[in-house]
Image (cartoon, rainbow, N blue to C red; front, side):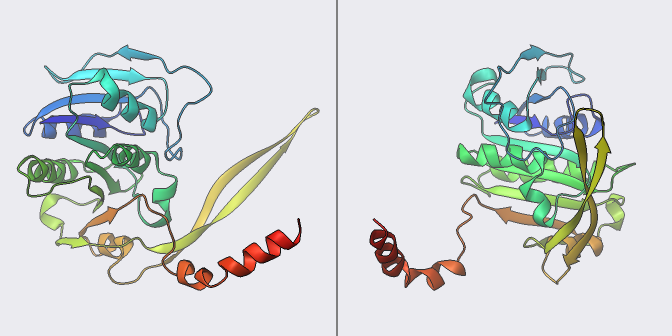
Length: 260
């Protein structure tokens, strides 16, 4: 089994190597990751400049490591299209220090890398620990190893995308596994204006989050010290709005033609 490991925090972070070490027990691992932190870039791709790739010193004997001057999605594209052994059977992104729950999946580079693999019909896992410092990576690494083994043994199959979040507690304090949905909510973004002689600059930062933490959501599970596994897919079509709009297609077209 050929496994690509990536992240959005960069090749030199602790979480990615904990993950790679665990996955070596399941298959042949290649680490392909950005050369710097890429948090918040989502599925962004470097369209307007070339992406440089260099071989890096691996922390694990026998594991190929590539340093990418680009995004997590760039890293996955390069890996899947020829820089790692083919076929790529699984992409695992993480271990991220910080939860990727709720609407965070729309901007997360960790999840964005997994989505990019999903576009290529490659099974993918994004895995994160719910803390911004002093992450306990061992439970996440063990879980990734278990899930990868399930893909290897065809217990799980097909182009599945799993977004996994763990509470930041030792293994013996985790209180179960729950298959969840994304929590709904939003952030209060803040703007900081900096004036100079020539330009005005703005720092955009995320402020306080307003979550609807309902039972069955990823955030609720993590707060209950459970592992959250949320199956995701790329189809963003609204099942609510589609039937409401279906009856208006002819009316919209007639109004459109009437203006010609």
